[in-house]
Amino acid sequence: MKHYLLAGAIGTLAGITVATQFAGPLVAQESGKNASVYEQLDLFGNVFERVRSDYVEQADDKKLIEAAINGMLTSLDPHSSFLSAKDYEDMQTQTRGSFGGLGIEVGQEDGLVKVISPIDDTPAAEAGVQAGDFITHVNGESLMGLGLDEAVEKMRGPVGSEIKITILRQGENEPFDLTIVRDTIKLTVVKTRIEGHAVVLRVTTFNDETMDTLRAEMTKAIKDAGGIDKVTGFVLDLRNNPGGLLNQAIDVSDAFLDKGEIVSTRGRKPEESERWNAKVGDLAEGKPMVVLINGGSASASEIVTGALQDHRRAIVVGTKSFGKGSVQTVMPVTADSAIRLTTARYYTPSGRSIQSLGIQPDIIVEQPARKPEDEAEADKPKTDSKFLSSEADLRGALNNDSISEEERKQIESEAKEVEATAKLREEDYQLAYAVDILKGLAAMDYSADKVTANVKPANTGADSGTKTE
Image 1 (tube, rainbow, N blue to C red):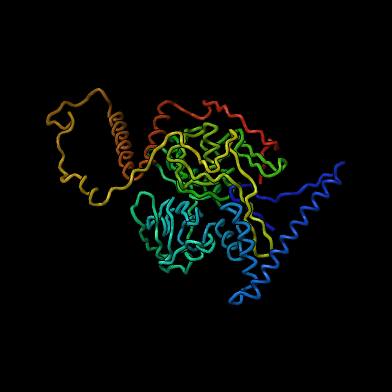
Image 2: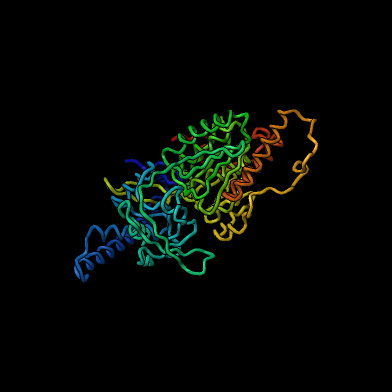
């Protein structure tokens, strides 16, 4: 049976029994605990039978038991739950990169459905759903009091059908509605673009395809940029990336690190702690890096960010990340159902847990709110005519004969790049800031091999060798 580890290692937990000279008292103590457990199981059986016989309507036995199991798991933490046959199938489909829906990653906070992040190029993102939004109603029906799985079920429907969700957003005076048309969500896990001489790597999720796609897209982007020597650096954009598979987060971190710890996990038992180290090889060949994060960057995104930040391999820019520092193992319990159980916490190379704290950027850069269209129109020039702004605009101004035509073209080319970055600020201020940082680092001839990362790995009690999954 296959196990998935969400922002954690894939595998099962093994129990170890140790016999000692104190076995007698320990066995007696264990027997007492078991007796108490059996009494509670009898209580459950009595309540179950009472519901079956006396509830006002005949209840479905299977649904009752699944609801009881889910109640037990959800009482532990927000990320543990029961996966029915349909939920289990949906989860497996999502890790492969295509599914139907709105295109949002959600969690639950204080009984409300909270958007962790919208997924790029999906109906939810295009409709304006933002990380941190609370969804209170679906088609006018309140979600209060529903479990997360039940709330998500309300949002599902046939591709092409319309849904109206009510949003509560910080900074807005009152709730508002968004109408969205459901669609098949095809995840583009990695997208690249070139800004000036910087390569921007937009990673939207960590599924089975992420590392292979990243490698292929990087190779293509470097070639399009004219080779690695022409690249000033790389922007790894993890904004609104809700995470995914730990093995993919490890591989992506390893892609930019030559050595050292990437992440460690610590479970209930010390012997179950694990640590993963980087192997030699840096896809970016030591070029400077900036990682972009925000409140929608969670789980596996935070693993990558924490590793690159702790090793001083990248400058982290943006706003504080989501703060999910726990590991969930998906364990099949029948042929078609499973449980998602929190089995460990993960730690960055310096030994810090970001659970409920998030990762603080090295440089905090807020994304300015977009101006309303009428306000934006007011800022636009009312004429295309050019007025005098420099010596060169004066009629009859002397030419500069101290530079060659090639040098002039180089200056003009650099000026166009600066203008392009200035224009980018209106579209994506945080990304423009990251590109400017790379320009500054390139001007200082920065490279990763010139920086010594004085990071002391945390002692987890685990083997310090590299683990491959």
